[in-house]
Structures are given as structure tokens and as C-alpha cells.
Image 1 (spheres, rainbow, N blue to C red):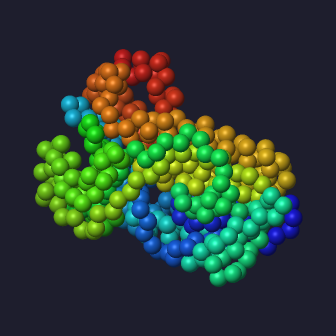
Image 2: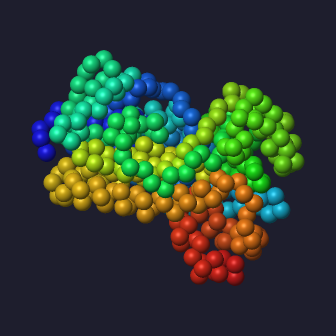
Image 3: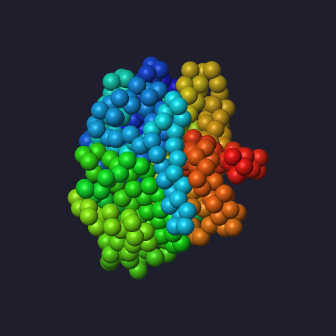
Length: 395
């Protein structure tokens, strides 16, 4: 590879970009991290970090900083299907808890960690152009005309990635948006559990966050987006009324912030080419209903850091190292992606799922296993294997 000012330029400094820059800088690579935003700042997010994501923070030495914000640990997930509720522990002995920190706090912790590792950080940097020479990406040009060169440019800038738009990688497993969700924060709504509620055509979830507030998000099919656009709060309350007990709880609470909405496409993109790579939502996006975005971003950043290290150090050919990154990413993420699409359809469960949920209700080891499936600890491939299902039902 040719000599450049930087080894890697990372475009986007949130949950994928900052950890990637941190991990590369810790390995001694000259890393530039840029973002159009300044920090601390908020972004649309369900902001749940499942136990595998919390384990990544622990590996990086950052979990204590997250807990120091006062964000409460969540050691119990519940799934209310109407007739049946399952509740269990979502984590492992080494990583028992989930967390849902506000993004103003989490993203600043991640950004500062990248800086502490030695990455150069430029906030408020708008990428105007991705530079390509002889078919290979070689750098970026900012809106202010500043040009920076690198051996690799990584797009960590989300679903609307300027890097992905410039390079137009092939997409696959594409599915249009399935749900639309709206969320806000309530006081006087005590919760120490990640609560998920599923009803035909509707779903909502609850999780405690910073400052004694509770995140509540509700959603419905994307096809109903236009019909409810002008009465979002009313539709949310109608949704909550599908559980009279929850409706009573939230009626006693107070909404403290504005309602924010989101609807996301579902896709995988080929995540690399000559001189470039994609990480996090820039590389693949899934419906928010399983709240896997942050955890996925953390694990994706770790996988890409390892592959870039292999390629940049010369221990492996670029195509081999980045091909392995794509393979590992898809093997890990695709089963959860497909499960997420099924949940996001908001259809009544089929007979097989009804039998499974009914059969494990009240059996604590089996309900713990169901919680670990939904937290990403256990792959759907493993959970839904016939021998495992049989074991759960007979436990």
C-alpha cells in the first residue's frame, strides 16, 4: 500500500466508528476519526446495550464509565404476549446485565476513549467527497476543502453513509421498512426490567435509563405510517391500552421529552472494496424492534479492527482479511437479522411459536434461555435447533 498521512480514516464517530478508531489506535495505527456532529449530542436510538455489548465495553475498559453515569443495570427481560408472559435473565455469569444509557453520554465516552487511545478527532467535519484514484479509495475531502489521505477509509456513518453512497456497494437480503416506532422518556414510571409487549399489529418496549427516566417505545406497521402521522401520541396510548396494567402505569407517569420517531430499511451491503470498508449501520441495518443496533455496532467494530490489523500489518492479503470480516459478520448477524424481520412483521405467532412459548412458560431455565436468545447471547440457529427446543420443552 502507498504511503499516506493516515493508516485509517473513520467517517462517523458514534457506536461503530469510535470503538473502531479506538481499537486501531491502540494497535498503533495512525487513525483519523471525523464526524459531522459535535459531542456530546443526541441521535435517534433505542439505545439498549444487550449483555454481549456490555461485555465488549468491559473488554475495552469502558463499562465502569458507562455505569458511572448512573445508568441502571438491567438483569431481567420480560416478554408479554398477552395470554402468556415469559421473564428471564438475559446475560451470562461474566456479563449479566444490559444497559440503556442516553446517547449524549455513551457516545461521548466512546469518542473520548478513541482520543485517549491516540486517534485524531475532528468534530463538525462534513465529508464532501470520497477520493478515488485508479479504482482505489485514497482519502476524503471535507466541505471546507481540506483533503486527507489514508490507506483505508471506513464508513461508520450510519444508514445514510456518505461513504456507501459514493461507492455504491451491492446490497442483498433487502427488505423495505416493516415498522415505524416512536419513543420518549417518562418520569414516575419505575422499571428495573427490559419489558417487551407483543400484540397483533402492535408492539412496545420499556427500559430504564439515566436520571430516573424510563424509555418507552411503541410501534406499528410501516404501512400505517401516514394514517397515524398526525395523532402519534393518541396512537401510542391506544397501543399501550392493549395491556390494561401497563396503561395504568403510564397514566400515572409524566412524559418529560418530545416524542421521536424512526423507521429503518433492512439490508446488508458488501462491506469492503479497494481501500475502503463499512461498519455498523453503514454495512447492514435491521429493524429496531430487537434493539440490536448498538450491540451489533460494537461487535462489528471489533471484527473489522481485527481484519484491518491483519491487512495493514501485511500478515494477510486485503481480500482475504476483509473477506473474512464479511463472512464473520454475516454468519453472526444473519440469523438475528432474519429473526428480527419475523418479529417486525407484527403478525400473530404461528402455531409452532405458540406451542413453544406456552410450553416454556413458568420453567425458569427455559425462560432464561428465551431471554438470552433475545439479548443476542444465544444465536437463533442454536436456540431453534430441534434438539434444543425439545430440551427446553421437557425441562
